[in-house]
Amino acid sequence: MFLFLLFTFIIEPPKNVKAIDNPNDDGNKILITWELSPSDSILDGYEILRRSEKEECFYKIGFVGPNRNSFLDENTEDNLNYYYQIVAVKDTIKVLSEISQPAKSYPQWFNKGKLIILLTFFLFGFLILYFIKRARKIELFIRRIAGLSAVEEAVGRATEMGKPVLFVPGLSGMSDVATIAALNILSEVAKKIAQYDVKLIVPNNDPIVYTVAREIVKEAYTSIGKPDAFNPDSVFYLTDSQFAYAAGVDGIMVRERPATNFFCGYFYAESLILAETGAQTGAIQIAATDSITQLPFFIVACDYTLIGEELYAASAYLSKEPILLGSLKGQDYGKFLIIIILTFLSIISLLFNFVIK
Amino acid sequence: MKVRFPLILCLIMGIIGMVAYYVPHKAVQNFDNELRNTALRIIFAFSLVLGVGSIIRHHWEKIKRKREFWEYSYVTLISLFLTAFIGLFGGIDGRGLIKMEIGKFSFDIQTIYVNMAIPLGATMFSLLAYFMASAAYRAFRARNLEAILLLVAAFIVMLASVPPVARLIPKLPYISEWILDVPNTAAKRGMLFGITLGVLSTSLKILLGIERGWLGGK
Image 1 (spheres, rainbow over the protein chains, first blue to last red):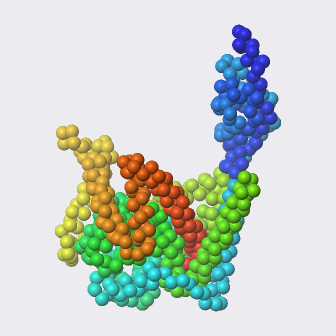
Image 2 (image 1 turned 180 degrees about the vertical axis):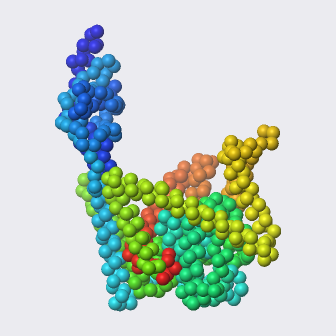
Image 3 (image 1 turned 120 degrees about the vertical axis):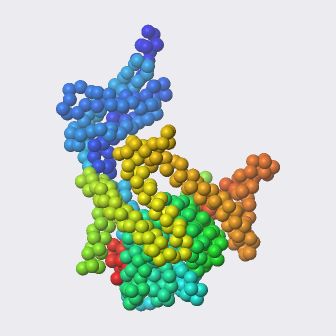
């Protein structure tokens, strides 16, 4: 009894209870914050009570432990006033805070937390578009990418040997930009293959990618004036199962012995299974991926590897179209800008830490 | 029109995707979810029909023209039709249209998946261990400075993972951790910057119709 009375006097309620619409969301959420009770260290926690403008009394909607000063009410009706009260709880003793000001939840039309991403998008987008426009007027220097320069040699080798070229467009779907970049490469490679009259094999893992790849190869043959040379059987769907696909492609490599293997797009654990089998069949191999975890496997097992951004640069590099080449310049300047910003901020951070110490 | 229509469609869909990323409002999110879930599922279902058609055509042609290893195409086609038959009539867990059981053995998709697809997938995956050994042998030949650096770094990281060695040389795990946390992470982040810019550049070019490789370069 004595302890009960003592706690009743000792325990103080949390103060400054505020309720606001949870920012940057699709509504139905109110964020409640409060200043911790001075008796926080001995509390069991805080109960959160709520009353809407339609209701007469408060109802418990949640409980948080001690040292917590916020709660997200995720079950509100939009455009309806809600009042909140926080209760400091110790055993059976409950001390109520003041009632918060009314708050309404409503959906937002812009996520302010992503403003910096939008600004960065516009900045880099402007850089890329500026260089694309500039490339129409003047010739821009683009550094040599060994893997892409070898494409002509690789297709030539297949012609001389009379063996096919295998193109694997990765294991990702059409929603992955890496797959789109891989198909852009396929378009340029197919044009060269059509010129040399080499057999092309494109096994696909995704049915949507298969349909797009088929159209791309068909168009490539048409664009160089050889629509009849297109073999619809050269682009086919294999399976969507990861290792069954790896087994299927390995089988093609062992049976057909392609002179050149292209591995472009996004890959997972099957990357080394494909690349090692290709290396053992003696094919010249060119890989291009932005999958950082699979890059080491391609680097050791392939003759040429396009690392990360080079995958996206490939189609521009191969097509040699000035407008597309301009975008590469924009990318390079974008990276240069990032390096400058990071170096500057690192120096500032170092100096700041040094001054504080 | 054959070129312009896909380009306009691509631009509209790209803008919708972008707007949905920045606008949390339900009206936009619901529309985006509808597109992503319902519309994409319908497109996938149609493309799957084309995909299965491609498999059948590819292997049927092989059998018809008696191309090299044409006998294996029978295995593929029979497996395809048999699995489809079991899936259609035996169902996922044996409770399909027809009761397909012999004793306690049930012919259904789950049985095929557990007893065939998983072991076969695991077999292919296990090959990775042998391929890793042969790839590592090739990578660790000290041909030039980069290969030597790779060899030394890999040697330290591998040794640090072996408990007796880590006990003998207590500083080794710290060196290994530093290699992974500092130079390795720095290189990864550098690549990520390039990849992000590449994705941005490719997306912009596709949305604006500058890059048309995906349309066959028309």
